[in-house]
Image (cartoon, rainbow, N blue to C red; front, side, top):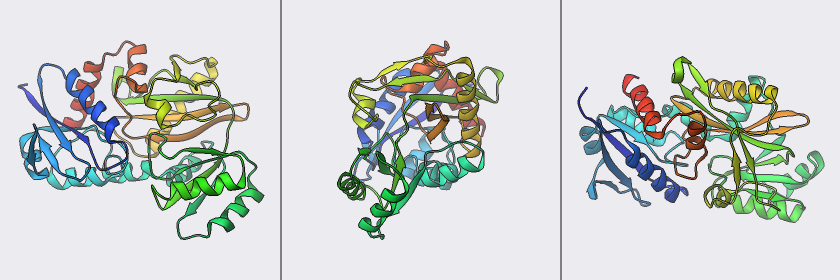
Amino acid sequence: MGTIRVGVVRGGLGGEYEVSLKTGGSVLRHLPAHYLGRDILITKDGQWHLGGLVTTPDRVAKSVDVIFNALHGEFGEDGQIQKLFDDLGVKYTGAGHLASAVAMDKQTSKMMFTKAGLKVPCGKLVRADQDVAEVVALIFRQLPPPWVVKPADRGSSVGLFLTRTVQQLTDAIKSCFTYTDNVLVEEYLRGKEATVGVVEGLRNKSLYALLPIEIRRPTGKAVWDYGDKYNGTTQEVCPGNFTIDEKEELSRQAALAHQVLGLAHYSRSDFMVTPRGIYILETNSLPGMTSESLLPKALQAVGIEYPHFLDHVLRLALND
């Protein structure tokens, strides 16, 4: 096989622009020698650049053999860019546009997880066209505090709040409405936080679950927010301090979540291990691949080097 041209798409229109730049940069640095990396930047205002020159999506599609999608959040993980790639007839890493849209929609994902027998946190969806005061009063009657508040269609814990009073809950919901028209309010689960990566076709398994990582938040932090994820303040232990049964169940649920959502190539699911059982929080269809990201750490823990993973995923995409 000759040199394969890989377009690494990074940047994007969403709130995770900087993280996407890091993911894309890391991918470009670790591509094996038989791949020719082409740096494709989408600016915050939607302008496409190829190798530093302004271009168009159509020209990009004609200049590469496959796309490594290093975008995160809206436009990158919600099915929009995937639909564009499909229309252009270019192969790409990650899930298709429909599965991506479903995975990005936390409420729809929760419904699918529940149907598959997975436990999810109790909660309520709040829409921008609803009266916030009325909804907050209803939540107060039905769900004891504290409450976790987050946009229903964003990633990397963007806009995540932990609230303990009605006023805090009201303010958090209104703040989330600056990101989206749909906000999730959920019960706060106490336990050990875990995340599990899944890779298709690795080591002769249709779905290979990586070792669960235990996420230990900074002292005094009750939730793991966007800043914690990327500023290196959390302690990530791989393999985490879980029982054998917990590890097996986390692996099973991560693989099941990947299947239920119809994802492709790789994903990462977040869980809370509590005395009441294991709860799935969400599944990321395009987990971060920066030096601080969890998936590369989980790969390293089982002896899989970053370039090998990239080669594996790109081959999956090329063979789709």
